[in-house]
Amino acid sequence: MNINIEGRSLGRENPAYIIAEAGLNHGGDLELAKKMIIAAAVSGADAIKFQAFDTDQRFGDDTETLSLVRPAEFHEQQFKELMNTAKENNITFFSTAFDNDRVDMLYDMGVQLFKVASCDVQNEKLLKKVASTQIPVILSTGTANVEEIIAATNIFEKNKSPYALLHCVSSYPLNPENANLKAIKSLKGRFDVAIGYSDHTTGIEVPISSIYSGAQIIEKHFTLAKELRGIDWEISASPSELTIMIEGVRRAEQILGSGSLESSACEEEELQYRNLLRDN
Image (cartoon, rainbow, N blue to C red; front, side):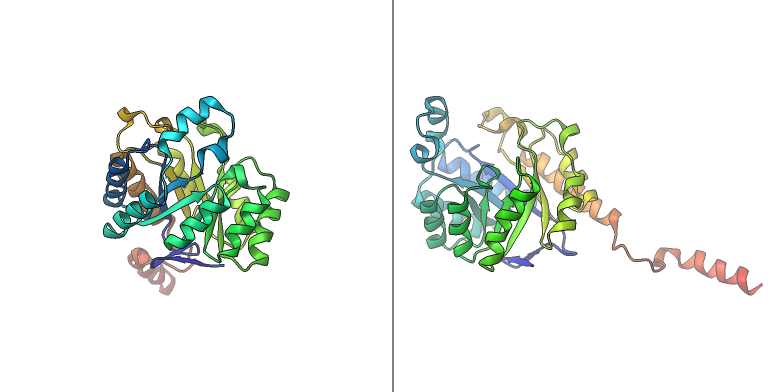
């Protein structure tokens, strides 16, 4: 099942789709969020993702989390401004929707892509709501086992809703030794959709390495400056780091090549020499 997002195809032999995860690093500062969009576009990202939620509905009576997250909650008009900024800078805007109302809001805005977070992999109500929109969705699989992933994807399959999966380890920050990148190959062996990787490590080595396990989508947390100490600053790439990461991803793709078993153009001289030896 192929996904096309604003002229970019995800999966198959296409270059990896790079997502800058703005998350809550903007702290609710709309102008900072706009600057993040512009910086992500300049760095070469294909998309930038935010998080759409109702603080009280999502976090209930958790006072500590409420005080941390509430200032970073954006509403519809703010998201519309961010979406316009993304369009002006030729980068796709989309968001993780954490409840059905936010799905409706984003749908009405005309988003071309949804994200469902790992924590909602068993949220049947939300999964069905997202699937009903028929808009492509990317689902992270952190904490989920195979049966849970299959149950979630069955909802999209039944609704004929295009989807992709991201291997994810829900640990913050993630020790690189626990990244388990071979899980990307395991997912590709079970699901005929675009498979990618959502990174929670503190550097860029692991997301670049995910290409060698077949990642077709890479999501990396993003911050305008680590000195701002956003909510996810420790696992976020700065604009310069994101640029280097994307260059590393493209270089890895070049090194992997096409997989063809035919002789390469660069072997022409050696091929002629081999044939000469045979003729003699």
